[in-house]
Image (cartoon, rainbow, N blue to C red):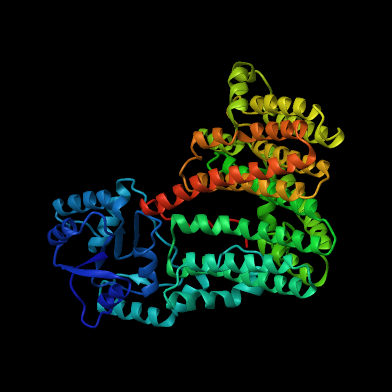
Length: 604
């Protein structure tokens, strides 16, 4: 239960009490600041509390935005301020100081507004939502009250609420083909008490059924798969819109939304590959290649964003040109579409599944994703080279966590620590790229079962250690994690393809999927300010260089059939370890009252 303390002189005919009750608040009435302080102290410390001026005039949705958003410890709008348990001490301190000062000695005569002013003076971070056309005011006289009430009548807050449920920045397909009606589905769900997590789960189940239809290998199955994939995407948009519409944000929800998106897409790839196999066409290498490419694209996004999350002097001519192009309407949509965001990508996959073959679908997907990756990475490289950004220790730490270095790489990093200080600033991405290319090309160009991939994998472990031997603060150091991902995934793909036996590539698909989940989980923890996964987890699954070396050793010591069994066993072991730890962490974070978040994730 949340408690709202109404302060100030009540106004006959005001709807403020009914509005607050509709938002789930239990009401208390305070006649002055001293009584408000007393009532505030009586509210249990584990509950949300709000101070609201009884003369408040405004939209219910303005109150909802200002007083019920779970993401912020302290928030306020004109005439109202709220605190969750994490912000309670700051609110109590500001209230005590305001009460001891005599209250009405300032020019601002609303207690809630005076508290907001006091919090600002303390340097406390108070969230103030963008209200736009919504009204939130404390009128000083009857004329101002009538004008405020008329302004409330003139704006339909439900229309504003529906509009704000949709992402402000989204893909073309989502904006024009999904959001015009998915927002109403979100409202329908909210009115029936459904949660975003339930809609997210429904989206996952729909996508898994779509993958099952694709796995039948029949034309009817492919058509049904395409339709269901679009239906899954509609639900995927709906869950975020429901979260924004009803302000139901949570740590667990953000994790489910992000991980389920990846699970849905990659499960669909597997379904397509199984369906193609039923028709006599082996496209597992294409399916695995698509997953590798898409995952590496995401790592590029994550690494670049984390490297520049809190960089200072973060400007460049390239960024200025991009901002200028944003002022030209048609270029915005073209640039959003050519990066093949999830909406356009899933629409393309769905249509091609229904009308063509899995092979053609994967070819189109690989070509489209390769072009998008080239375009976005080139632009980010240009931005990095032309800006004078100074990166922080936090950014360097995030990149080190994304590198996923195991005991071997960390040992080499310690050995190279002093020498690395004398190396050029571009050392990290260069040695990561060269070491990764060496192991992938060696596996591709030598006979399966030979010793040379092991030698190359040892060299890769050495170069990986050199790449992270000093803080990753260079202009292009954000490229190191995606190069390391591409090396590990590429080695598994190439060795499985070179084994040339049934089951090797599906086993490799499972292993890469398990490892990719671990890497995505690392990203979501960093984004949620929860830190990287525990060191024991990284050590237990070997780090990227340890897994790469292990796969090359297995390929050298085992027959092709035995290698397939070993890959399967490794995939199961990695999946069990990372899933158990991930679920334990995120469920624990949710139950432990971790700050609610809402990660918009990939542009839909």
